Length: 67
Image (tube, rainbow, N blue to C red; front, top):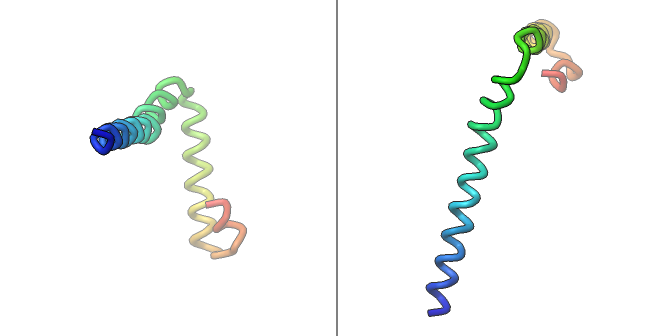
């Protein structure tokens, strides 16, 4: 009986962990994006693209950290 309760407890903890993982990776970013301003998304995408281009051109360590 004791082993069965341990298995149920671990199964519930695994299910809870999977639900939290799903919320962090899928639901939370969608929620944040829906409330962000389009200008902020544009500025962030320009920042990422410019850092990627600079990293490809110069291959410096500082750009590697920025990218």
